[in-house]
Length: 99
Image (tube, rainbow, N blue to C red):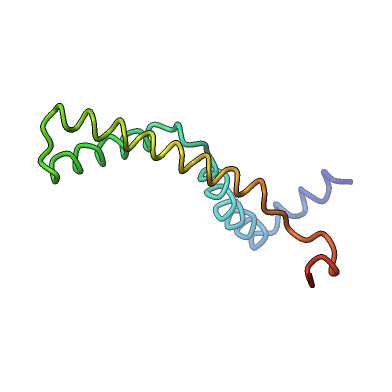
């Protein structure tokens, strides 16, 4: 039954285009939901670091100290945001939403 339905849908040119359009809309959503360890993010962080170090005209010693502090700050900020997201609950019922 499902095979017949799929065959019928694929014979219809409009349905082929619709399915292709839906796939093109959905795939980027899943692709963007990757974790932060993808190489592009690492490259962006490296470029950001080089840019900020250059703009602030930091010596190598100052840059090492600055980035140590900056990275600690980022980790603390990430932990606070994570704790906040876990602590915030969405209402499950209309009564909870009204409170």
